[in-house]
Every structure is written in structure tokens, then in C-alpha cells.
Length: 563
Image: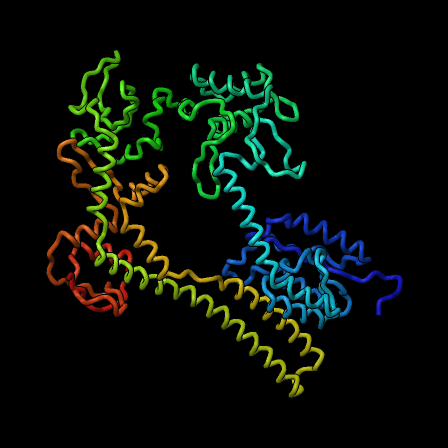
């Protein structure tokens, strides 16, 4: 019995997992709230706080709940002396109802009761019901709120309004402090906006690369931080790298660039030129040749058929408006700046719309046909299943360790029965084994994450690569560039009269082309045929073998005949 003048003992367990930073559940916040709770309940801490720092529930290591095991072991070793196991909320304790109730039962056997700072749980009927519900729905609730928050911010960005605090030069509306939702674009700061705009334009016009010089000018012109104080070089670097000043918002959830509704300081073209100046590429300030110009996605992919240099894009104004075209820009100058050589196709334009339409037609010609895609699905699924067996093996080993612990426990029970060891010693050891079993079971369940539906994923992938023209049309310019690199790793030449030349294709498209272009003979492909019965026997061209070996790793022992 606890002495009337002695405070009941308690321990605190806090944890941050992959998604644990959501909704103010950092370790510091948890510790502070738990200590306040203990003080209010009259509990005395019996140990330093047990801190599970940033361990991932997806980690295959069986030790990723080491502090949790230490905490319940501490309760065991101090049986009936630790009255409270305090957590901020039940989702810090366990991530599903089964684990929650199992460990709570273990603690109860040590005379320790689970306490939640933010939830009403206990031994009364209504408290027990609430505890089960809280354990079951806490993870679901957190996931829903996180998704809603993410969706809301993403939608706001897509509307051209930044949901976050604006950068220096714009007024902060203090929406959060006023408990309001942000519904309008950020307004210019009447004092700082013109100074930063002047700084950006000065860099552009005078081609000032030095951060030190720009910092000096900013302080000289009276630019200060929001709370006062001189501008630092780090602040200058942040200003000159922020697309917000060019009227561009980047959706962090999709990577998509959005035209903001706020007043910009420089145009996107001017901003891009400033970046080139800051990188020391002073002579490259031509916005029309920027790497990710949305008007000309095929630059760096399409090459001049005469000289092999990637084409550039340009916009020219005429009587009918602005004309968009691609052209070769390859020429050489001497030290005096005089042109001494230029490509025969230099300056000869190719209409942008014509080139884009020709490219879409070419994409259709290299799109894999159904026969190839069926084989592709068979290979990928079979390889996935083989590699997936490795993960299954890890899980089997984990379950085997749990089974060994259960057998160990039965062994101690038998020794107690036979009198080989004392009952008190045996129970002590068995309790320790029970704790280890419970901890390992939690880890195994957390590691058994929803498995990827590989069949669905492969169907999605084949749909993607079977609709190349449609896919290319729908992509954003940055993704278009990566898409083109995937299909044409070294680019492709284009002649205004003859069209596209022959080019090296990405692996999957190269294999498809070789299959289509070779009438083939029987080839021994032992060790590479998909084991699925859905793939008909036959032969593949010899050039197909290395690629399949890379992807396939020797599974079946039949022949494949190309039909």
C-alpha cells in the first residue's frame, strides 16, 4: 500500500512516427503536456521520459519500439509501484485496437493503469467503450484530417493564392491569428516591395552576380527584415531564388506551377534571366531557350538533321501576331565576334505546331502493341513475385522469432510444473518473455503494410505506355522533358522534308522495335521465360535476351516463340 504522504508513481511514454508531426504531436509538445497532466493528477515521475524518437513503423527492424519495451519492462520490474503509464493520446501507445488492449492487459497485471492526457479512458463502462473507440479511430481520424488539410492547401494554390505566409516584400494578413481563412492574394508591402523590385531589376540590368554586393545595396536602400534589422546574405539568396516574386506558385503536392494572383515584381522571363546571371551564365540570357519553356517542350530532344545540335525555340512578332517556331542556332564566331561558320539550316524555322503534330504521329509509331504489352505484364509480375518473396521471407523470420519466444515461455511453464525452478522466478522470466512477444507482435503488424496490388499497377503502367501521344499532350512541361528522355535518351534528328531520323530508344521501346522488326528464328531463352501459363511458348530475337536478363533474373526453363 502506498504511504498517504507518498505520491503515486508514474512514467511517461512519448513517440513520433512517420506521420507523428501532424496536429502538434512533436516530442517536446507531448512531454510538456504529459508532465502537466502528471502534476495535475498528483503523480510523481519514477523515471526519465521514455522517448521513441522518429522510428518508422515501416522499418523492418524488430527493435524499432525499443523504448516502448523498456517502458513496460520498467513497469514489470517495479510491479505495483508504478500506478500510471501516461501518453498524450492512445494513438501514441499503439496503432490498432488489438495491440492496444493486449498491452493494456499486460500493464494491468503489473498494477499499472493507462492514462491518456487528451482522452477520457478508465475502468468505468463508458470509459472503456470510449477507450476502444479512440484506439480504433485515432489513426483513421489523423489520416483524414491530414488529407483534408493537404487537399485544402493544394486547392488554394491551384486557385492562385498561397495559403502560407508570404515572403518579404508582401504584407502578412495574419489570418491564423484572426482565425480566418485566406481568401485573397497577398498584397505588396508599400515599403519593402519597391526596394526588392529595384534590387531584382538592378541585378538584371547591371548583371550583378555577387551576393555580397546585392546585400550591400539592399541595406543601403533601407531594406529590413519584418521585425527590423539588417538584411543578411542568406536572406538575399532566398529572395533571388523565390519564384513567388515572378508571380509563380509551386504546388508542393503535385509539383505543378501556377500563375499567382498576387502582384509580381518581375516577369517569369526576367526572373529566369536573373537566375542565369546569378549562376554566372551572363551570355545565356535568352528566355526563349530556357530548359523548361512551356512553349517549346521539344528543345533538347529534337536535333538538327544537318549538324546534330538540339533545336531552339523562338517567338517572332508579325502582322498576324506572334509566331512560334523551332530552328537551328548552331554557328561559330571568332574573337572579334564575327560569324566564321554556321550550319546550313541555321535560322531556317520549323513551325511549332507542325513539329508537335509530327512528333505525336511519330510517338504513335513507336507505341508498343498489345502482343508486346501482354508479354511485358507477364515478365514484370513474375519478377515482382520473385522479389516480393524476399520480403515475405523477412516476415517469416520475424514470426519465427515470435514462435520461438512462445515456445520458450512454454518451456518455463513446464519447468515450474516440474519444480525445476521456483514459481516466483519462473513467473518473473515469463512476464519478461510476454513483454518481448507483445513488442515484436506490434512491430510485425506495423510492418505488414498494405501490399501493392502489382497486377493493378502493371495495368496502369501498360495503359500509360500504350497511349504515348495522349500522355505527352497531357503532361506539364517539366514532366514532358522527363517523358521524352525516357523514350529518346539521346534525342532524335528532324529534317523539314524527310521528318524524323532513326534514334536510340529507351529500353522497353527498343525491345518493342526489335521484336517488330525481326522475323526471327528459334532462340534458346532458357531461364528467361515468364513462368505464368498465360504466356505462349515461342522464340524472341537474340537481341532481346540481354534486356530480358536484366529485368528477369532466370526463372523459367521454356522457349518463347515470337508469333
